[in-house]
Length: 198
Ligand SMILES: Cc1cc2nc3c(=O)[nH]c(=O)nc-3n(C[C@H](O)[C@H](O)[C@H](O)COP(=O)(O)O)c2cc1C
Figure 1: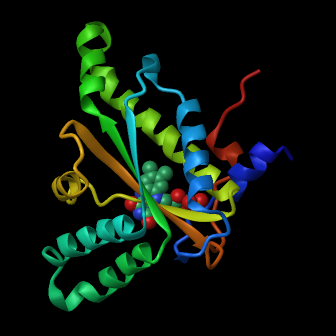
Figure 2 (figure 1 turned 90 degrees about the horizontal axis):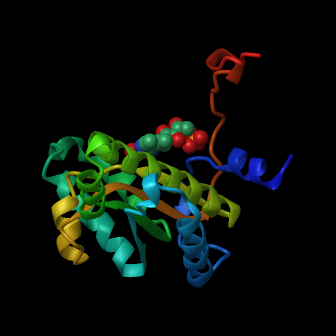
């Protein structure tokens, strides 16, 4: 099996994450940069934006999530939510995925006949980026999982991390030292979900 397919098959949602990965911050950032620039986008618009958080910045994001959810979830039922969010905070870092709507809207204005397609294309390209980075992190020997606390946290995130108003938050990926493997996953056979016509 090629290393590419092997890496794809090994990527899983890993929730038991720790702060002592075997690769350093610099190697992680370098790998993210390498993959980020190689991932495609519609019209090569490159509207995706990333914010990579380590250390206290990472903790700060999960404090925002905790505070936000504490205001929504009834106090008596907050225990499981608190435990889950503490699990994300226990990880080594987080990648926040954004789309710069000023770029995407600019393409929509410049190509009116495709105008309605640019937002879905931006989301699709962002999904490709998320998958590529998720797999690259796995390839580095790390574990990662994908979260969506947006749009609840958008305003606070933009304020605390001083981000442009045009950046639309799409997803949050925590990563770190893999403390436990993922359990088995049920998969519908590919043959049941695809047709090969020849
Ligand atoms: C578009 C998308 C959104 C997802 N959102 C979440 C999420 O908000 N929280 C979460 O814990 N997992 C999320 N996941 C992870 C899926 O639940 C997970 O990938 C799926 O169950 C298959 O498991 P695996 O990642 O171990 O292969 C998401 C995955 C995708 C592709």
